[in-house]
Amino acid sequence: MVDRGHNQLSIARQCLVLGLGRSTYYYQPKGESPYNLELMRVIDREYLKFPFFGTRQMKRHLVNMGYKVGRRRVKRLMRKMGIRAVYQKPRTSLPDASHKVYPYLLRGLEIDRPNQVWCADITYIPVRRGFMYLVAVMDWHSRYVLSWRLSNTMDASFCVEAVEEAISRYGVPDIFNTDQGSQFTSLEFTGALKEAGTRISMDGKGRWMDNVFIERLWRSAKYECVYLNEFKDGKEARRGLKEWFDFYNQVRPHSVFDGKRPIEVYRACQPERGGHAPLSPASRLAA
Image (tube, rainbow, N blue to C red; front, side):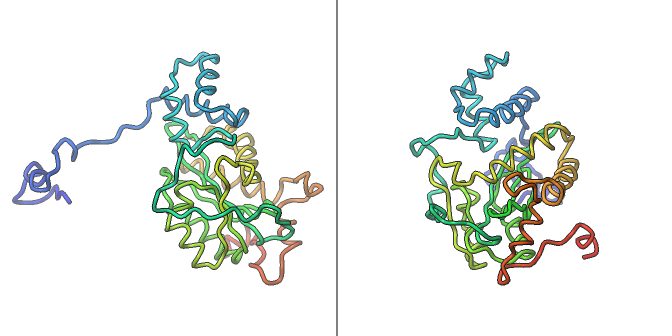
């Protein structure tokens, strides 16, 4: 609301009229220190090895590795990264009070075809001078990654964009499953799913196994792509992740499918009423 080029009111006067401190107007948020960024990278690596470590155990583990860090800092950084220990625990973190939480619909359900169940999740991606967040939408049956997005904030908009792209390209799934994170319980996200006509399912509290396949995707993406490349910035991360997701979908064999690739399983089992076959890279360029 402050107009820097106003010909009558100075910035100080405008701040006074608005009830805004002048120092607040000039404030520039500081990013994490190089040491904190290094800690976040280490926490991310170690979390993939020991996902059951909470803030106490992670702090002790980092100290044993030679890092000077307290539990409060570890807790803050893990929260910023969206990382929580994997075990059944009391309700210590709640989604936004105005957000509805939906029941888990996959318990005991036989998932035997594409577009029956999709799932989505967010993970932390380190870059040289900071970090970003990655969301992916996956077909549960075939493990085919339908869409993904990178963002420098954990808001709901980039998650909605990923879902809308997946639906526009592949049709509407019967069920869409996520965890209870605030991005996925937001009215913006659930509204997009309702408008598309899919049933909404959400994991139980502390139940990472309810969305296990996309958790495995993150492990593969980080060990096979992110940690090997150490991306300089978001642009480099997008380019590298695009190459890896193309590799994952179209080249990487899966032992659970007797060596078949996700794209083969998705196409072979595609139901007549659901979506359309994914486009090849050449077709995407032509489009």
